[in-house]
Length: 128
Image: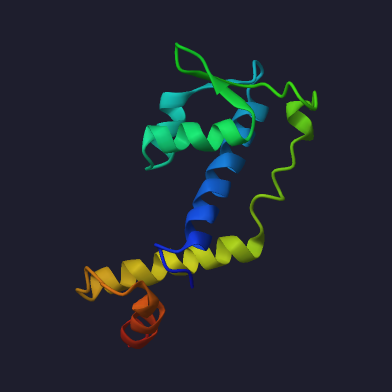
């Protein structure tokens, strides 16, 4: 299980958001989606979302529309591999971390000061 403050957890969140944004764009006929729609799907700050989408060659115009624009490789949006961003193993680890955190909150543990102890605490208190 990943610690929510760990680099692996944060990287998964980024890749998860990028994969869904690519899928949103692929499913639209005009290959555009509003940034506000993306912000509703992911509970992340808008600046963080903009950074994520910039890494996958998606640009945001002044009206808030996100469009795919790969100038360097001239790749089509349909050629962008989404399956490389999210693997079943990463998804399972993320779900396990979410479940452990939720169970700890149910048990009354709201704050763990040492992130390395999250796995230990969830195994000890959530299996009862």
